[in-house]
Image (tube, rainbow, N blue to C red):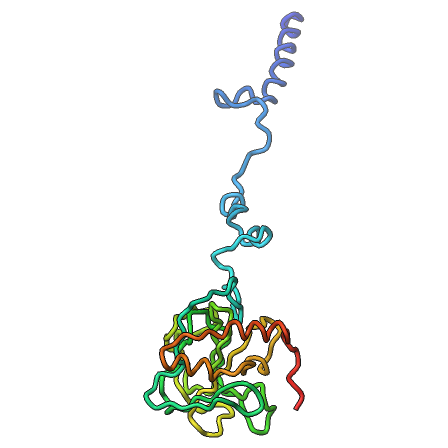
Length: 257
């Protein structure tokens, strides 16, 4: 028979041991007494990009990212038009001819053999490029008359447009920087060229986002400037083009015929 005093002591010891086991007092040395739930490294926390590297965050803040699309520079004028830029004749050929006037609207047809180089008139940025001949006699007259064509937005704020090309140089695309005399393509007879090899040449203001073929084809007479460039001069059309733009703006419809 166990003495009553011993039973009381053992019962007291058990009462002390139960809370100690519940608290983890018998774990590894140094273990916390209230560890709580286990902490597991989150894969998202490890692999997700930081806010500054996230394309979504960049789009929100307006900061450019490595995957951002290149800006659309089609027919964008120079931010500050420059004066005194070099200007050269747009066709490199020994045999070349052009008329001082053009039917129905200001422009010039520069006649040369098919395949002769067409070059940038001045320093600037390539605007529109048409590599496909979509002209059909049975289709609308005007929008696709140029066939294969290239426009250059000069750093002088003037657009120089050439059409009816046979081909366009591979490195010529919208937004590409070009220098005066750089090859754009070759003389041809695509579009509504009446099967005659020539370059249709037009001078106009860029009118970004508003203009159409009726402005791009030409609004001031090119012949006086072509005369100068052909002789090695540097007559600049920027002032005349700017005056036309101030007077007419950017007409949103083709002129009535």
